[in-house]
Picture 1 (cartoon, rainbow, N blue to C red):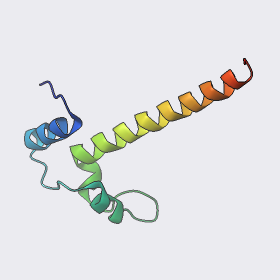
Picture 2: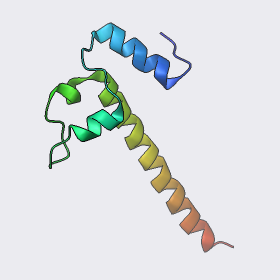
Picture 3: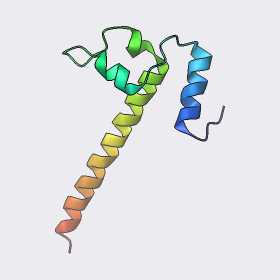
Picture 4: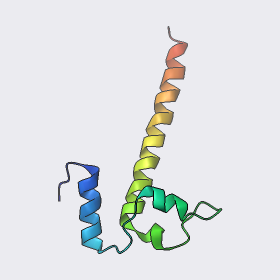
Length: 76
C-alpha cells in the first residue's frame, strides 16, 4: 500500500482495522482525562496512534531545527 497523503493512509488504516471510532483530533482531545490519556478506546484507534506518532516526529524535528539555529548563531 502506497499512500501519497497522510489522509489516504489514515483511511486505509481505518478500513484495514475496521476501526469503529473514527474521530477528529478535536473529539479525541475532548475525550482526554486529566492525565492526558484517552478515557475510552481512542488510544487503540490506529488513526489516533498515527496522529500521535506524526506529532511526535514533527515536535522532534522542530527541536532539532531550534538547536541547529542556536548553534549557528555562534558561528556567524
